[in-house]
Length: 229
Image 1 (cartoon, rainbow, N blue to C red):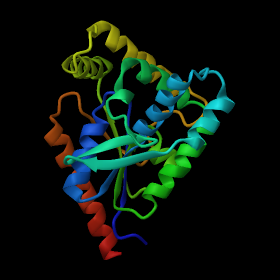
Image 2 (tube, helix red, strand yellow):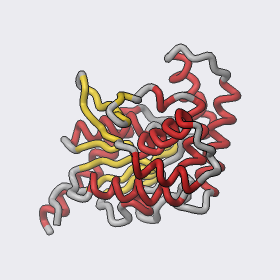
Image 3 (cartoon, one colour):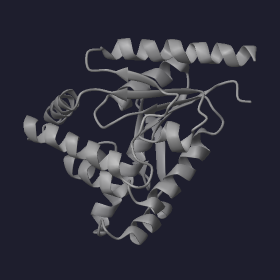
Image 4 (cartoon, rainbow, N blue to C red):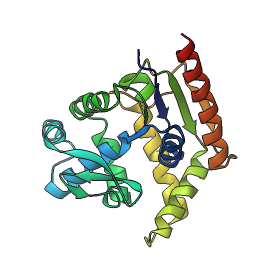
């Protein structure tokens, strides 16, 4: 049995999973895997290659052929697609919208889930996404479902994009978040859902530090229990 647990953090778009997961992994000394970024890489590659979002066979083959890596550079984790740093390129509104469609393709999910399991099977890792605690690692020792109101998540996304110099509209961004929620929750393959044994954390009125501290305490209790077992 691994002494260091697998930490699964699921939740809808804009809930703060990426920021929280990175900080939690740093606090714990764990590796961090942003599974959402992996689906974004497939979406970006599909856009660049002109692949029809409805061509599920082509998307499945594409996801199998891509080389997706997480590397640390200048003190932060970056996302690489076939050797190119695409950390910024995968965060555009266009890629975000396509990612929801791409991630609903069974072949794409099967290929990336297998990769995610290989990355995290030894424990000592924080994985974030939408089906980590339900599909990827249903037996993860520590599970969280991080959420916030759609309006709050849309506001956060709007500020993030605006700070990057993009011209965006607040109400449009909120509507896009709501559309992404509907698509993620209703897809046939691995829909967004809270695992029955996951701890629900609503970050709407909480600071980043408060969320991280709460998770860190719960993971600490989990590790203590494993060491005593």
